Length: 192
Image 1 (spheres, one colour):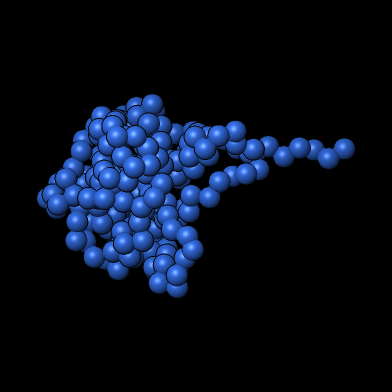
Image 2 (cartoon, rainbow, N blue to C red):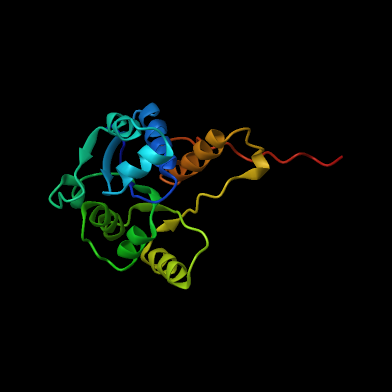
């Protein structure tokens, strides 16, 4: 059996640590990662995480693709990947995906997932939402995307911001069915 392969897109939205956590968890699971980042992602990673976060993200990837390399392997449906996660997904990237504007490799790779009927998980990051954002989310969902806002699972009583980030990233990974579920699960307490 071949090694599972996933495309990870990281856009310039706030929440850059989500992309880093997805990459770390996929790497720990021995999943091949095809990484494509928007122009703003490097700056956002440096501002929100640490100055070396972008190079850390690249080191976790199996293959790094330039945003303008529209001829990269992940721009073709013939390349066997399980699906794609965009973490975080800016409203600009969401709008381009929702309307089929394959103007860079991130949006083109997302479009490929949709046309091949593969999972496309978008960790849409913005608040509050405008009507344009909501309509784009609806359009992306109608095309087959899964919108996964990075909302904390407070019922798990996370002890740190890192735990919240890792749980959200794990939920996105679980949606690709790469392996057994990795996200912490809710365990109901019996009422006696």
